[in-house]
Image (cartoon, rainbow, N blue to C red; front, side, top):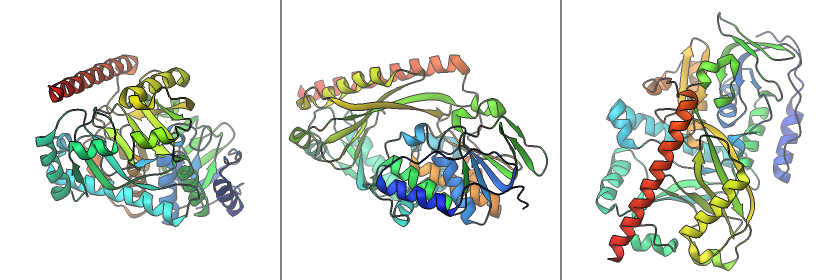
Amino acid sequence: MTELSTSATGPDDAAATLRAVAAGFSIPHRDRLTFNLDVDVCVIGAGLAGLSVALEAARMGASVAVLEGRQVGWNASGQQLGTVMPGFGVPIGDLIARIGFEDTRDLWSLARDGMELVRARAAEAAMPGINLTSGALEVSNVDIGDRLIGRLQMLGEDFGTEVEGWQIDRVRDVLKTDRYFHAIHYPTAFQFDGRRYLRGLEAMARQAGVRIFEDSPVVGIDHSGIRKRIVTPEARLRAADVVLAGNVHLGSPMQRLSDTLLPVWRYAALTQPLGARLAEAITFAGSVTDNDGIDHYRIVDGDRLLWSSPETTFPVDPKRRGGAIRRRIRTVFPQLGAVELDRAWSGVVGQTVHGMPQIGQLRRGLWVASGFGRQGLNTTAMAGQLIARGIMHGDTQWRLLSPFELVWAGGRIGRIAGQAIGTVARAGAGAAGLLARYRERA
């Protein structure tokens, strides 16, 4: 490897990053790539997936540069809720139907390992203020007693996942609402401050020797030949391997890849302190997700609710969605009354047509790590390991994801259809829940 110029970042920047994380402050602005550079691996995109790939490759001995068009974690990676669970966003039954039982079990094992890798990173770096808590509940809006047993057996016996089935009384003992029936408890799942994890991951990457350049958008990629050429507005970079981790923001250099992702805006809000009334409504310390994908929430800072609710395929002002979240909270927990929000925000993620992430090699030396719209933090860590091992050791485990090919997301028509399908699905879930509660009362 021949370096064409010296880097403007180094150990002092990593130390400064760690100090900023410890103090709870945002990371100071970084320098752009203003000089030509030659590295082993170039990662495009400094979100969770890109930083994970960079960290793993650097620890395996590669020289790594990360190019970010804006700032580290400026979009969805810096706005996620910090819940870490095993598995994928696609139901196990759908995965088995598509790739078979054995491959599904292997993929599930990799995703579970990804969850433990995230936990290990948080512990290794002793990330200050990360506030890790254990346990996650997946609650049902309808009575699924018979189906619950079968799912628990599959998750526990066939896929080696630690799970517990909760009956209705136990669910409603910790969540004081009649909207939920049974639940699956994941005791090894956990949640933490996602932004602090992102900054801690950045600090770990810098300490491993990764060079991160912000405000350095990629305007051209020549992926032919042994050494790939990447062009930014002020400099050029050469690398043996290029990893595309820019999600829906890759833009014109890889527009065909960006077009395989449906942009989905997710909205979240943090309430103002709710005092004792929150403890009377919710006594579960972990995260809660309903099985219809409508609500996702948890308690933070002792008496606040961090709540995420329905998504859109077109951008909407977070302040407008904040009102919808307030109404949703009151619908699920009417005893909380009218809650006030401290702030509301949004982030856009890329969602694939088949629902699984895009992880693997597109052609020799050109890799992709994107499409984490339905997934969790565990899959970004998993992607980092799979791609780094593929680059550095020729490992081919990433081929387990090959059946989930790149599929055009439909452009604007796809976004309209996606919004309509989501609206209908949520309406159907609401109607099913209403009917289930009526039957229970009857």
